Length: 271
Image 1 (tube, helix red, strand yellow):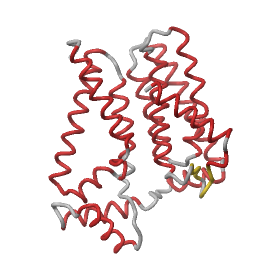
Image 2 (cartoon, helix red, strand yellow):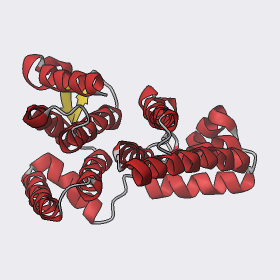
Image 3 (cartoon, one colour):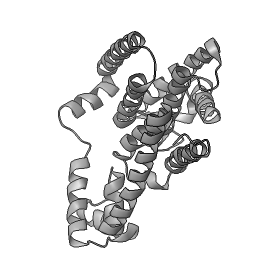
Image 4 (spheres, helix red, strand yellow):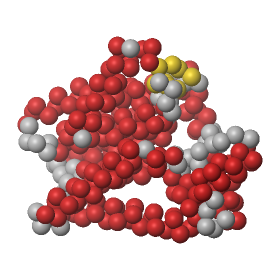
């Protein structure tokens, strides 16, 4: 995770400062090498979350040296904001809040950090709203604009109701094209599994999530280590806004991290 986070930091420096030709701004969103900005920002969210965990938890007992991790945050956060991904920004803020809330530190420090974080969040949203392009996206969201998500969710539920065993990926593409005239993602991983694989697939997939959640809770309860729980919350929030994430290595990487983390704790008889 350290290597991943540092790599994301280097990537943000290259894109924002060294090679700006790698990106373009389209409809208020920073798009790097024609990749979906939601996908790009999702990786950066995981990096920011781990850096904050690294600073707060100090897993390698580095003392004050761990605060050098703060140097990684400005460019990572800036790129998440510039991506225009509302879900990624909220996921980053949620992950940070969970870290401050669950980290085993003194109550005074926890209150101070929470207040600082709350103030930073207000400042960040104020800066976003005064931005002409980014502000319009958030104002639309506050007015109830879901970027077509509710229409797609309604269509997916109707398709699933009529096809309880699922229609498969190609079937979904065909049906959604017939309804909207173009292909559009479900914007929700669980609905994507439901429409493609049916109710049985959704049930089995939900069992996987429940098992990972239980393992994350066990680590927190027995060792007070918040990493699995924070990663679980972050990835859950991310998949609630995209369905195609099931094909991303990032998604399975985080799951493997949590599961492997549990095994290492089990071998030490912590759980």
